[in-house]
Amino acid sequence: MGPLHGIRIVELAGIGPGPMACMLLADLGATVLRIDRTEAADLGIKRPAKYNLLLRNRQCVTLDLKQPAAVEQVLDLVENADMLIEGFRPGVAERLGLGPDACLARNPRLVYGRMTGWGQTGPLAHAAGHDLNYVSLTGVIHAIGRKDQAPSIPLALTGDMGGGALYLVMGVLSALLESRSSGQGQVVDAAIVDGAASLATIFYGLHAAGMWNEQRGSNILDSGAPFYEVYECQDGRWISVGPIEARFYTQLLQKLDLDPAELGGQYDRGAWAQAKVRIAERFKSRTRHQWCELLEGSDVCFAPVLSFTEAPQHPHLKARGTFVEVDGVMQPAPAPRFSRTVPDTPRPPQATADADLAAITTSWRAARVSAAD
Image 1: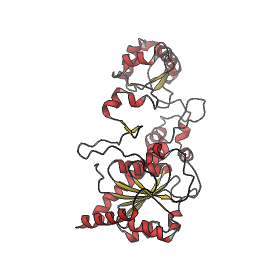
Image 2: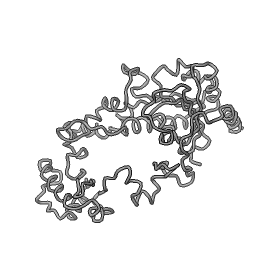
Image 3: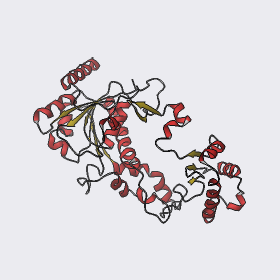
Image 4: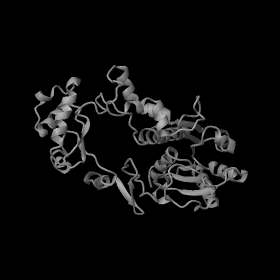
């Protein structure tokens, strides 16, 4: 059932980090009802509903929120909900009549989660943007990439999913926990710029200490060091090594049959370029499978670079059940793990408007009354 069983959440349909946050909460047992638009809207990358995995584990209804009666239906749900999550631009929810003031007036204990890129305040608050723009502003994109090359785009993991969805989840759960003692709800302003900057805290510390060079590809963790890198194998596939600690690096060189004296000191930046050439030559001499047989499971900090097709088939991830197949679609399983309140296997995304809103409202009201008793 998951540790969040019994928590009721209203989700006003959005894209990216908002749905990701609601998926995470639903994966862990929360009851999430998604309120979608009645009219077609351009909401991100189009694909069949079956493959829109961020919408798994919840029901969905369509409402025209420009109509007062529809707004009142949402407020009826809010009255018996624990959270509402929305990802509109600042001011949109207020204009619809579903802003924090209106919702908290109906339910003073409500946690109102707001997901935006730039945040609810600031000069850019009302501007359009996407993951890449938000993360670029924080300094993170500038730091990612190889030497003398353009900054790299780290998918939407650092911004939308990490700095956005995960920080929103942390925020609303923290606010929910606090509301249990104070009896008061509050608004959680989760901005991707704030979360992405927070994720980069360690690097800002290294930079302040003079230990992080702003030239991309010249630091320990950004492909500058030969011992924290990906290398191509004989068959064109890739492996990764990351023995930052001296004892692990020594083991790697032993297994590669390389003389440490010929490569220079591990942290001698002047020797890094030549050491990388030597290590690259050695990895190019065998296939990825051969390197896995020699290095996987050892303390050299090694892993093959797997594709989305390959990863679910790896023995370690299969043993842990890291991936699960639902309705013929391979996808990541709920995380993290719980010893007692184990989350259920995810349910596939549901067809829009398949839920009975009146019945749901009644059941939520009954659950609220029962909890109060």
